[in-house]
Length: 392
Image 1 (cartoon, rainbow, N blue to C red):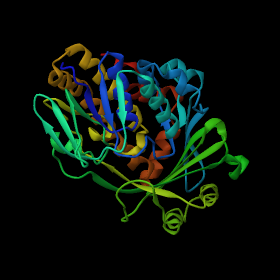
Image 2 (cartoon, rainbow, N blue to C red; image 1 turned 180 degrees about the horizontal axis):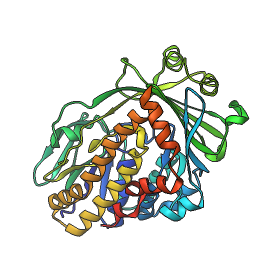
Image 3 (cartoon, rainbow, N blue to C red; image 1 turned 90 degrees about the vertical axis):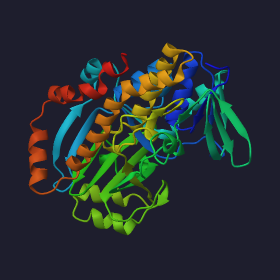
């Protein structure tokens, strides 16, 4: 390895986790972010046990634990009838099975834990307001900014998300796949929600071409709502003002509880759900990708942040094992990761269809899920939450 740092493009959860994972192995990095300050757009996210396993490798489990809400159960409800279909307990038996709890955490809070750790580490340099004009690859990699500055590194890691410019250099595929699903999100004070709806649970209301997710955040002081429905309308990007009339139309046949929850929100922010087809190769010479830049997935498995942090841990480990041979390290990293992340991409699509089933398909779904025992549910989650993903 040269004496130059590894360049990381993107200061979200994946980029910061990658910088920290490299630093754990004594590898310096320079992380550049195009925004004027480090911030995370979004609301609540769900953090499975595999996400905590990655945070353990980064030495940040305790910090994240203090900021999360630990639900008693994961619940699937039928949004039309209002019936409870199935429940996965997430108490002691769940923790014994998977070593870590299921956690509900504000995206900003998780991002802040990673940011503070990165700011304090002497091997990590963070720069904001960096807009990239071009990337030149040779024995090293050089980023040229729009204002004419050059930053040279021994390699480049793209953590620049769904619309990654770095991916264009490595994969060169088409634009992300627009799913036709739109998500509206809102966070409000828990006191604005009727008390009977404030369970300590992650509850998903599934219905024909729509679903609603509800759960508490920040010790129960906040209440997170995400409404998803099929629509021909879309706007690229995040944090666009939502059309409340369309939202209400899409849920017009839902049960009274769902309508009550939706009515508590005065203003919604929306984003379009997109992903890409899984690919086997996202590394080229001394450039590689992590997180959504490598394997963007729909939100239906709640694994975007977890997969990005897993990527970071395995990438850091591969770099440590291969020393100065970064192209080999990057190839080793993607070999370890591509099948697992592809499975998440594919299964997220499957879960979306499952949640949004209608007619006979919905009846079949409800019958199948209602017959499932907690032990059977845990067994079905072993591939995702088990320890094997980071054992290499």
